[in-house]
Image (cartoon, rainbow, N blue to C red; front, side, top):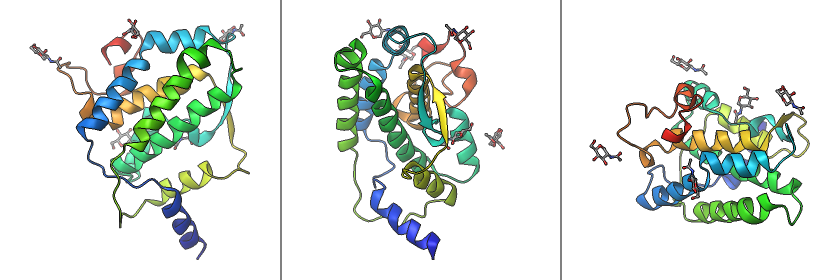
Length: 201
Ligand SMILES: *[C@@H]1O[C@H](CO)[C@@H](O)[C@H](O)[C@H]1NC(C)=O
Ligand SMILES: *[C@@H]1O[C@H](CO)[C@@H](O)[C@H](O)[C@H]1NC(C)=O
Ligand SMILES: *[C@@H]1O[C@H](CO)[C@@H](O)[C@H](O)[C@H]1NC(C)=O
Ligand SMILES: *[C@@H]1O[C@H](CO)[C@@H](O)[C@H](O)[C@H]1NC(C)=O
Ligand SMILES: *[C@@H]1O[C@H](CO)[C@@H](O)[C@H](O)[C@H]1NC(C)=O
């Protein structure tokens, strides 16, 4: 019974949209990718902060390539993970904004713009009216913890690492938008993102 209630609750909060990655979405994600390039991430999310500065996020807000591989093995489908990506990315950017004073250059020149851009993309996601999809329990549990305001699983992360992960997982989950000739285009492999290879993304 409890499980059933949780599921109903989820149907409410989950954005419901189609898995097909549309050309419009690819265009939007392509420009998001440009605003998240390696040099901009370094300048605005690392150099503009004190050395080793961290913010506190929930465990579930740390969403990396390894999580994707693990959740795929736990039978999550691509769409579950894309929805999760949108949620954790939004929360992550918001948390960084929360610690920045009004006039901080990262806020004014970069992150506030990026955030609005991101929200616009979210609004244009193709929506489906009804959906009989069954969401795996492992994904339901993550959504439940993400929405639980009393949940105490905190972890310190650097602002840059949040958006580095966002950048990489975006390439993995929306692969079709980022295909290239490169022989190293396996975006889901941590190997692909080893130091120095970043610019190939
Ligand atoms: C990142 O984008 C900025 C602004 O568009 C550009 O000047 C810079 O060369 C880009 N850096 C990389 C590594 O692509
Ligand atoms: C920042 O973290 C690195 C790696 O953990 C450490 O080597 C370095 O001493 C730290 N720097 C400061 C200023 O705390
Ligand atoms: C990703 O994995 C870490 C452990 O490495 C875990 O704490 C976190 O909750 C996972 N995130 C998601 C969204 O599953
Ligand atoms: C998922 O399964 C694949 C293939 O069985 C394996 O190579 C990979 O290490 C697994 N990933 C995780 C995070 O368990
Ligand atoms: C793919 O390779 C061809 C020939 O090497 C090149 O003309 C084309 O621009 C490349 N496309 C992409 C997306 O890199």
